[in-house]
Image 1 (cartoon, rainbow, N blue to C red):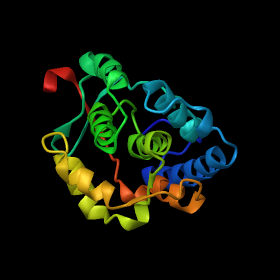
Image 2: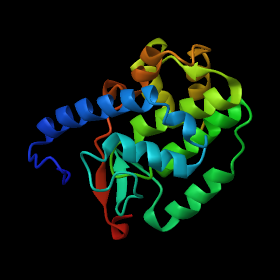
Image 3: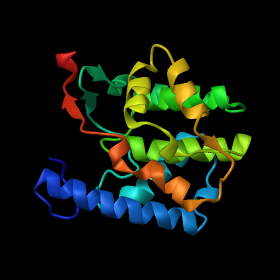
Length: 200
């Protein structure tokens, strides 16, 4: 159970309220032009997206996590290497679809926030695609299971996630409904567990 600004003590209730608030903020961020003011592909822009989405729910919105986290058997970048990972991701090229997806995969491995990584990073991905190649992902064209499996395998082999995302690219970059599909939490079960370094 994460500490939150809403005073909620039920995980289920928190998930409902968090989704409701983050969707409202995501819609606002799209409509008021905030996204267009961000530099695509930087951790700084991702942190701003995360803060915008979750600042009404969590004190840690937009801040690098202070615990090690895992999902299932996969452990994301350990705290001791997290800042170095983020610095390296910032330097990665983003001139082509392939380069952008490689950068997205690396940011997923880093998982810089305590919660809300999937939603904020998908918006960050779309911002890179929009500014670099004039396209975005239509998430309604992607099967949830295909996406989750491809993302699980992506640290070892990114060809699957590239295939899944490429087949869903559209040039309708100004369509709010297409954009909002990326914030749909049903696409991505976040549910992280934390662990201590000595558990590694």
